[in-house]
Image 1: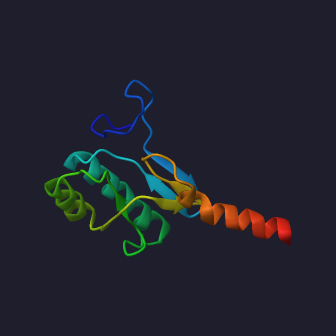
Image 2 (image 1 turned 45 degrees about the horizontal axis):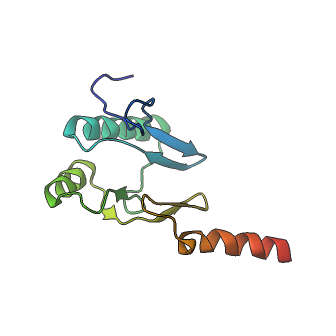
Length: 119
């Protein structure tokens, strides 16, 4: 554990998390402060060296609240080298979003389930 890394917890008093991972997919959760971002990038660089596998930044994305300032967005993209995309997105077949639920967010998942049931 690094005391300089600012993870994410919701509500604020809950335990902080910093990643969710399954097989070769991962979601890394961090604050936008430069120290935390650099620590994340250092860990990813160490992983690349140790494993021989490279992080594909072109297939990676940064997701931030829609009201995040352009200054913060630019800083995050500069430190990480990863571009920003918008919510919602799908992770392991499940929609990830932070606004009120919409049936549209689940349509892909519902279609997959319906197709499996009909097969």
